[in-house]
Length: 356
Image (tube, rainbow, N blue to C red; front, side, top):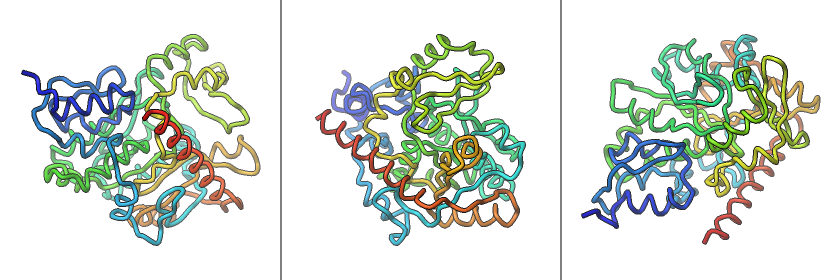
């Protein structure tokens, strides 16, 4: 008889059927009863455990964020708005080839490339694609391989599932480029009740978080792209500042703008209740810059939050080796980012109240 009170049953009820699954992949390859399917986690069979490891790591199960942050970060660095901040920079990859093939300033690609080259990590979990409609999570072990995965896709991929699989093998130190929910899942592994999961978490060598307002559901977004552009010509996508109110699809024939009114219809329901704009549970968080010169200049730079000693040391090496270049942070940038983050937290709280 199927256990109606088992771990898979309750997670399905509380997260999947409720529309809160982020497709982070935390439960996949952790437990044999889950798989990633059709842009979300799916239950393959029922588990007899009352509360399994999947409950511990799922970013949409109840989490004491303050307690978790207190365990993972220096107390003096913690802020209420954006989590731990050791330092805040505007930076970009010095290598123009990296910038050309990456999103914005190419800072994420440059840092992952550096982390692999100096042995901080021996494997990196990234997102790549065979086409604009099919982003997939992948693992690379050579520095220059990171340069093939620098574009944003705006569709969630189960990257933590790839980490879970790698953690079973010979990899010793794994880096993950993570959205906020993925970074939270990885953080929760460090304090989970399961000794096996805590052991796996010791292989987390670096988490580079991505600023994220929302992710898109794969099927409706793919259809939206088909309705507006020749998808075979897409070479990238970007979201300019809010005054543009559009998704910019970069094609071989030039940019095509799609109204955010249409794009927002494709936003995952789980993202409406997400409180984290800046991937607070990362070593380093990276997002697009905001500069007084305007978008044309800003889109070639990144805002970077350093959160941990690991992140600080990597940035220092990047500076020493000339991997990254830096410019002065415009006055008020950090305050504006904090305000935007608080705005997201407020919307998430309102959504949670309305869902009760």
